[in-house]
Picture 1: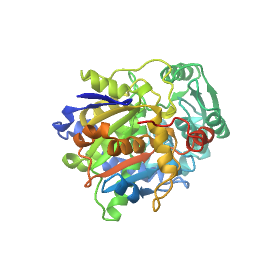
Picture 2: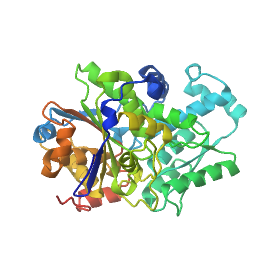
Picture 3: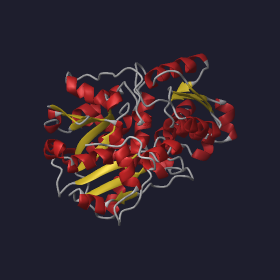
Length: 410
């Protein structure tokens, strides 16, 4: 079933209601494996759990039991979650070159002169809108290696400069995201570099899998926080999809953790780069791509080609796919920046706020009532959103929040 209401398109994945838990799809995201990843990342002195914030007043206003927001804007002082995946992937690459189990290797050892003499300086290459590249550049510098970052056309020059401050080579290309990924592959081949990308192509699945294990640490932290507070698990989880690795990592962890009791998963994308929505609408079991410039303020989600690993997980377990205009993300940014009295203000960038923007519309816009009812969103619902980034482009953030850029009109 597909619907289009005021620029918000949605499709229900009927198979998700009957697909039961099967280990083969998400085994690499089992809690014990993700816990090992977390334990490794905790060696970094910058590691600190990001907060899980309860928006009680907003939940009351929207007639929900609770809204929980994992605030990744506070991750490693890098303003986004992406470093979790990039840093862990670099660690795994180095351990593989040393022929050692990561559990037996410390951060101190990887940074040692002995290892440096053995491995030399490795060049890590990626394509990014900014956040992944920033995290990768930071991790490469921390581990004593180099990075070269390619950004798609239209990328923020402020994000470019932040990457360069980490000591990486970085440039904005005249290519869209997916073509920039291909360009990064060719560059790595010519310069004996290693591509660290969270998408998948032929014979390139291992590194994306490691990146997803890093992303899943967010889900591990969420569950640990709820367990420590003796609070119930979320009933609904709203996840943004670019290539899909972030969404699949969190979804896969929750499926492994809760199995048949897993929450309802809702995938959200921008209209201009809604490859998961379109794939679900075609409904032939295969991922389908979006081409063109993908001009959206949600730069972190401007990806046209789904990761095949992520697609297999998301296609099996996601209940609903929503494609929405930029105005929905802008609405979410303003809601979080100017909360109801009693709730905490959250600085959320364009890609980070779209989930709360969609949720607010589903609960308050009469034209989306059918979707709300199909998802069983009601006063017993505990909804989890993840703020994947802060104001990584401060100038644009102010244009949206201060100046009212991209207003939503019902």
